[in-house]
Amino acid sequence: MENYDDYNIFKPTFRAYDIRGIFNENLTPQSHFRVGLAWGTFLQNEQTLDPKNDFIFVSYDIRKTSPLLSHAFAAGVMATGINIEYSGEPLQFGPCMFTACERKAFASAFITASHLPPEWNGVKFYYGSGVGFSEEDNMKIRDIFLDGNFKSVDWKNVGQMAIITLKKEYQDYLSSKFSLKKKLKVVIDCGNGASCLSAPAVLESIGLDVIPIFCDVDPTFPNRSSEPNEESLKILAEKVQTEKADFGVGFDGDGDRAVIVDNKGRVLLADITGLIIAKYMLKEYPELNRILANVECSLLLEKVLSDVAIIDRIKVGHTFLTQDAQNKTDTLLGIESSGHMVFPTIFLFDDAMIIPLKLAEILSALPITLADIVDELPFLYKRKIAVKCPDEIKFEVIAELLDIFRTRYKEITDIDGVGISFGTESWVLIRASNTGPKIRITIEAESDKQVDELLSNFRKSVEDKIDELEKKIK
Image (cartoon, rainbow, N blue to C red; front, top):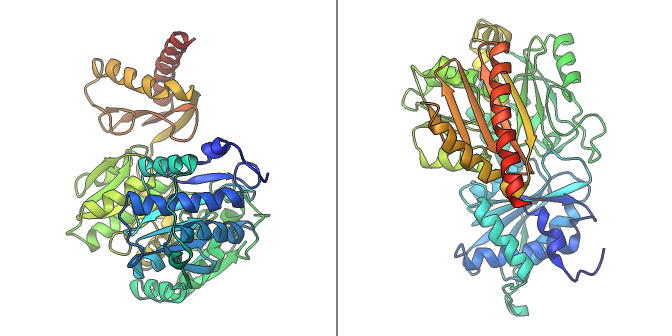
């Protein structure tokens, strides 16, 4: 792919929270150069960046195509007259954002495809505060990319590049923030991704006995998927048990999400890990009592913490998580069901390294194990399904279902789709996917039978409404 008469072939790579595509199919060095042009233009036209006084920070992950794409992207940005500070080496997400914030960059860009397979790549944009770009702003960048109306400067005013990274300063900062009251053993699975570059050293720096697996960088991700979940973390779970470790941690491809495995080898959902951490942090920071949790997070947060904390439900998406954490100054912790977390007492961005560090600090002060804490929690049954729905009607489906259900149920919200609450016993969430032609239904209840009944009823309502609206557009 060399010459493009129509750049619309790259339009699908622009998503709600980032840009992602398959190398040399719908994402190329040429397209990334053009993305740099579009982003540089956007920053000056829409975000009031001053090329004489401001700069942006660009870094990249360990994917094989990342150095190539980061250079192409940086060249596009500099062609619009913006100066760049550039990592010059692959980074885990945390050091990238730490460098950008410490250096007071106007904005930052991270070349990555997060947890996707090795042939994928892309870029994530962040404001100077560390909050990810909104969907609205990403779509404005897309429109500039397609229109080709780029900021242009002469040779005297092209942006310049300086190589800088604060990886060591990042490690030193985290080391100063955490301490252990007793020795703990942790198994760490980096999945051969970007976390290999910092995570083992950071965990060792606070005194943890670290047992690494898959902690050598390999951009082909040969040992497991770069998406950390119950299936991909089976070897980690086994290693935690055979080593009699206190817990295990598995990272995604770029290191902005971490999944915890307890000492019995059970892979914990992000909201359960967040609940456990919040329970103990509330005693440490009594002046901070707000827990941000997206609408897909477990009802256990209310069951366990509502007497001592404000459970503030927000939209799905780590951009909303970091934005709310910065705006609501009484926030103790922000939890995304996908695994992103924000600890405002440490960083105002979602660095996954804080999760195992904080958990280790908590466990080191307790006479019980992580599994003991998990076993003490109430148990709820949870299920998620996706129903196919054309993109052009999925939001209309949600809007019409909201009107219908408002006449049937007392406790209903429209924070992100349709949320129906049945006290602290069960809840249903119906929301349009931000990334594909489908509607997601999430249900949590106190019994498996109750989940089945709710799922049967609400799935039928969703499918009937999709059928009705599909007939209207045919």
